[in-house]
Image (cartoon, rainbow, N blue to C red):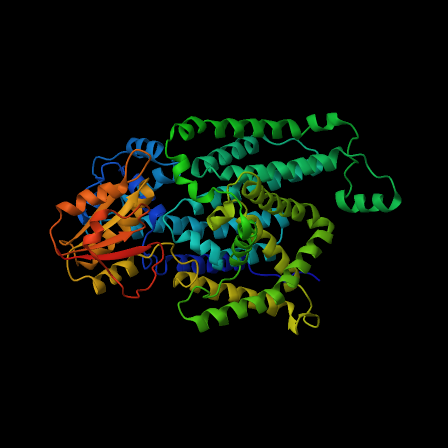
Amino acid sequence: MAAPAYPRWFHPCLLLVWLLIGMGLRLTNLTAKPPWTDEFSTLVFSLGNSFLPVPLNQPIAIDVLLQPLQPQSGATIQDVLTHLFSESNHPPLYFVLTHLWLKLFPTQAGLVSLWGARSLAAIFGAISIPAIYGLSWLAFRSRLVSHLAAAIMAISPYGIFLAQEARHYTLAILWVIASLACLVVVTRHIQKRTQLPIWLVLAWIGINALGVATHYFFALTLVTEAVVLIFLAWQQWRPTDRSPHRQVAKEDYIKNSPPPPHHPTSLFSPPWRRIYAVAIGTFVAGIVWIPAFLHNAYGDKLTGWIQGDRIGIAWISPIFQAMAAWITMISLLPVESPEIPVVIASGLVMIIFFIWAIPILFNGFKTQLEKPQSRMITQVFAGVVVAAIALFFCFTYFLGIDLTRGARYNFVYFPAVVVLVGASLAISWNTLQRKIARWGVTGKMSVIIIWVMGFLSAITVVCNLGYQKYYRPDLFVELIQNTSKVPVLIATTQKTHVQIGEMMGVAREFKFRNSFSLSAQFLLAHKDKKTNASNTLQNVLKTLPRPLDLWLVNFHAAEPEAIKNCVSDTQTLPAVNGYKYKIYHCNS
């Protein structure tokens, strides 16, 4: 059946609709959720500031703790690079861009603009909508697939979660999309056995270099692309099956192209030699960061949370963590709501939805694999996804680095998933109305239901009922306000700037609520093999006047003797995300 003819303006206008929806969702409630430690890292380093001037092992006031969040007129890009390379474990591209971007926004109570920092990630996230449209068109030559992929990207709860944080993942997603676009073009050249143009070689190397300069885990995307290229090389190198049945399939598959050579030298003919040049250029662009990465003394400390042995039930937790990330690329209802009935209802609806939707998506994927014109490109994107998932589990189970704990790391293959979902839904959309797709729902209606479910999921994330922040300093400060009526000392153990960020979140809430600004102090008790955090707290408590409320927050050390002169609070108080606390009332 021929596709209906649309006016020339139709497709650009429809793409604009997806872009406006996606941008609107990403900018909604952009600063309603408090920043967490990783975002504080972005803010401080992007300003060209450092965490090191924050005093340790002594009581400090709110403004002293928040000083690294104050823009400095003389800060330069060189300052950004210097502090980032010495105190963090990330490449600099996004931080440099944020440094320039933040100059456009006024301060907020003397501190850097959170809306300004997050808006850059939101804009990059919105740009991924037309970018995924272009990638899908390049891959499938179908306006329908392109629009459906763009529509899914616009409302993906996972995509919106990444876009509403002042972090580099949405920019990395753009590089993933661009690199996959190069892979698609190269796949066409491999099929036709034609030489790659020089501009494509240089563009692919440049994109890959920018991707690594944005996030080191972009290298995982490059590994998945290498796996796909090895698969394509194997298909071209293997001896041709001359059976009649296989020959018909080959003719269908390759159309009128000549049969592949039977000898290994074919892998040194066009386009493979220039593919090797891309690999070498990308490798060089990646290894230039190794000295900076090795020079950083904080690397192991900052990534310790994803490292560990798999013991007992922990062996299966990565499987469920990975599945949770896959699900949220399409749907996420308010399963993190504080209301138990809402959680139960949301969970049931999601289970029913996926029982209904997964066969639809699988049948669409299977149909694309069976169509000669889309088989190869479907295999390419599926190969990227499967290789990435395999890599994640290899890191988790063989290297003891649980990448499934950070849902955000799935950015390395997220665009490939969106393209495959768009391609699968296109099959349902084209199903004749008289054919029932599933449970009495027609093909077009199935697509609409899946999209509406995604839209509701996007609202869930925007309202902080899904993908909730790991830290809730707003709730913690409210708890302190309601509990303590005397000056407070908030004490924590400090290893890296992560713990400083935890306390910055609390101090920032105090500052904007304009309460306890003169009577709240913080203690960052440094903890290592040479320093005893308990002794530090002991000495500080001796110097502070009474009455005093001591809040031990994420305090991972033995409680000092001085606390015995204080009374432990016995109230049953609510738990707060990111802040494990104990309260002591010191009145004498």
